[in-house]
Image 1 (cartoon, helix red, strand yellow):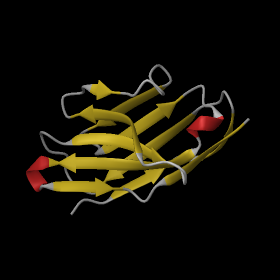
Image 2 (cartoon, rainbow, N blue to C red):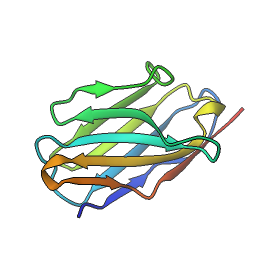
Image 3 (cartoon, one colour):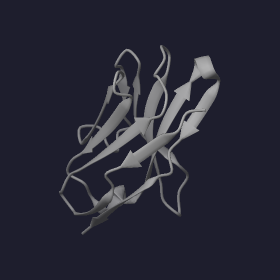
Length: 117
């Protein structure tokens, strides 16, 4: 079992920046994929960024150019730098780790990001 602990959410004005962080309780293995998702009460949980163990990243068009995901395998941490935030970015953000070698799909507890207009 892998536990993920997020930090860094909060309230920011439109146009501002925030950095979210996530720490894993276990070693990151080859094949593991880190990701950030977000969810609002009205919408399904959606992917906002992912990064593989080799460093390949993926972003949806809604955040491309504004969000950057990066990770430190040795430190077992992943971060999401969010710039030029807007009210539509308001959501609960979740850290996720998919670990094929463990046959696991792990989630953090979520951290609230609120962007005021």
